[in-house]
Amino acid sequence: MIYHFIDYTQTWKSMHRPLLFLFFCFISALAQGQNNVQILEQELAEAQSTAEKMNLQFEIGKLWLQQNDRDAAEKSLRAAYELAKTLNNKSMDAQASYLLYEANRGNRSSQSFWLNRTLDLAKQIGDSDLIIKATIARSRMFTSQGNYQQAFYVMEEAFDYFSNKGTSISELEQKFAMEQQRLQRERNLMEQE
Picture 1 (cartoon, rainbow, N blue to C red):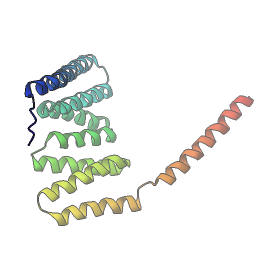
Picture 2 (cartoon, rainbow, N blue to C red):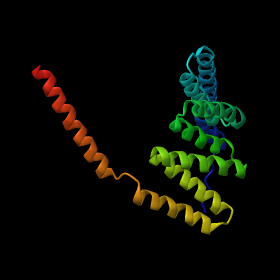
Picture 3 (cartoon, rainbow, N blue to C red):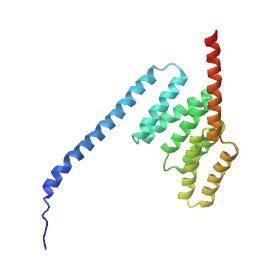
Picture 4 (cartoon, rainbow, N blue to C red):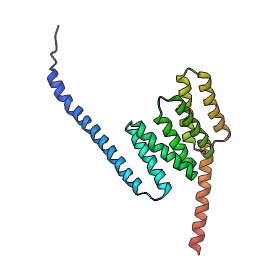
């Protein structure tokens, strides 16, 4: 038998540099995220319009959520949500509602409220991405509760929505081509004048 001697000190020496590098990258990213929040909060303090304040609150909330500070994220996102309601901006309302769902992990009643709101608004504005995200989240929530029947129903409801009211990719491509042709005609008319 041949025994191989492994020099663990050499292994540690070769591994500690990449680990230290990753650690410093993590600390640097965390500090950068904090700096971004501070910059956005300064812009928020100087913001004049309600729409600008809404967008800044939303971005600040997203950054807090990325840093796993759910309380700070919820505060900013709730402010963005309230401003979106005031401005009747359903798109921002839906996006803020979805992120409020994420900020309320562990609180099933709040999660359910925010997901239902997201789904309702996303359907009203035709935001397919949010419909899909909210549907998957709702289905997973019911599955985690052992309510497989409701999880199936939620997925079936989304499938029915897209089958009846959703926009297919081919329809979007056709609309895009028609719009391109219309713009080209207008350009040609303007060049002739």
